[in-house]
Length: 86
Image 1 (cartoon, rainbow, N blue to C red):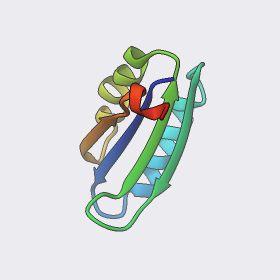
Image 2: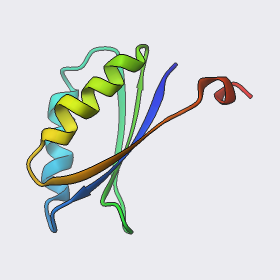
Image 3: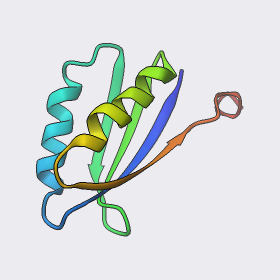
Image 4: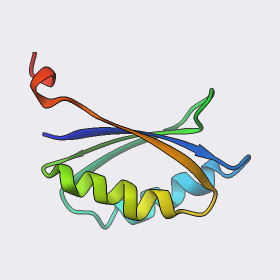
């Protein structure tokens, strides 16, 4: 099952607003599991997305998350599925 970790940089003080927006639009995504947390450090928010289709994961990051107001940048890491099984 494809898994993506997405690290998000946001404008100062907007992380709660962004997390709320992500949860709202992800509630309408069938077949995608979301885990989301605000974090301290270089990045402000971390997501773990799991779906049956890797194309759907890429689409969510490109067409939804990156277009949210106050998201400055994202770093997406796709899990290597063959290594996931070991």
